[in-house]
Length: 225
Length: 307
Image (cartoon, rainbow over all chains, first blue to last red; front, top):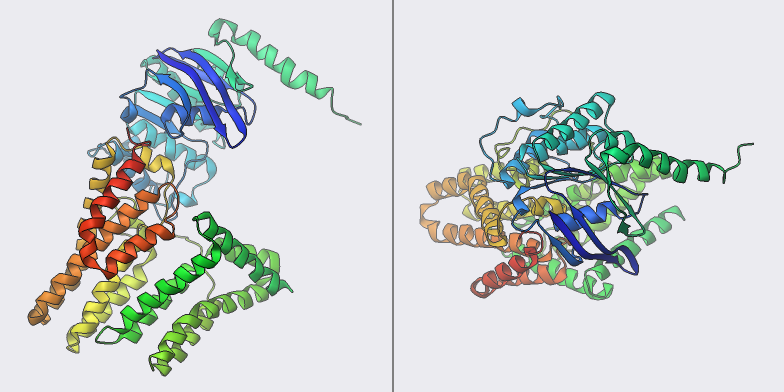
């Protein structure tokens, strides 16, 4: 169990995470939803330890080398090839004897500069790196952004497979169908705090509730003629 | 009006960058001036061909100023002709201090050449990285050396050629100067700042991370400089003492640069870090004091990202 106790993150005079108390079951796929700026990426960066925070995150100690993190915008240098990017991420986890070509499921042009990749290709490259590292916990921040339909389906299948293998997955996405199709629980982050998690049996109801809140009421605020 | 606005913005941005490093901008200018003078005086103390080493330094600075994205933006915003004018002026400004030092030291022909290089380089259009990546012998050790090798290949090739000439013309000083340049170039490979995730992703302690970084850096730097050091040793066996001193200091300098980078991380190296590294360059015995200090500081700084 990953237990969050009083997690608070403040940037300047903006409090992004307001003393979160929450639990995440290990070995499950957790979808995280929330509006832009709700703090999903900040929460992920706190989970990884990339950001300083106040409060406590229990259950991940000693797992630093087993967490795979796919950021929203993976960083790549100008003069590094896709192959070198993957090799760097493997070496960082002391993985030396790996046939990178054999695991190139997204058919990426690995001998081209990664900086020349499109947004979707870059996402797929970073995802491949995270998968090659043989992690136990996966944090995917918007993995579907910019990827083509085929890869979209493949990524959904990858997440399902990770779930079957009892890996712990955190997944943020703005596409509700991808979450409801692959997650065990969906957690909504709003106002800097998590609401009660929703299990698979209530995904449909949650979808309708979100549609009502986010679409119907907002639609009435606009003028169409 | 356009030029005045452009350069005023550049100065404003530079001032902000200096102040972000924690010092008033005028102090930053003063420190930069002292550092530039220090490096220049050092170069002109070289026994052979200091003017050419100085030109290589100028060429490296000018190459570093050529950015494709910036060029494309300027062309879009101001048009091609004005972009060329701006780049010529910028590069000429950058060449002026070099030309000044060359003139002070009596190298008037090279002084003219430096101004010519400054002007001509402004006409050269920065190229976008296209086509296949340059093959590099360091591909298995990402990321500093593969990137640095690709970026600085012309400089590396130039130094190797000049060393060949030094051996042919019996000029040990030139060869030694090029070896020094090579250590500076290898250290420059560590200047690009990586994202925090590039450090966080490592499965090791801060100490192990630093040892791995330094170890890889030293081994690859030794691989880059070894052909030159060996050639100089074969052609100038009587100067083995000088050679060993430069190699030792070069490797220690690289070590200091790597540690200064992670002392400042995730921010760029600021003036204080540059001062510490510069200090140990000019007073090598200080290495004994500063290397443990730098190691300690960078280790402490990395603790948050590497548990």
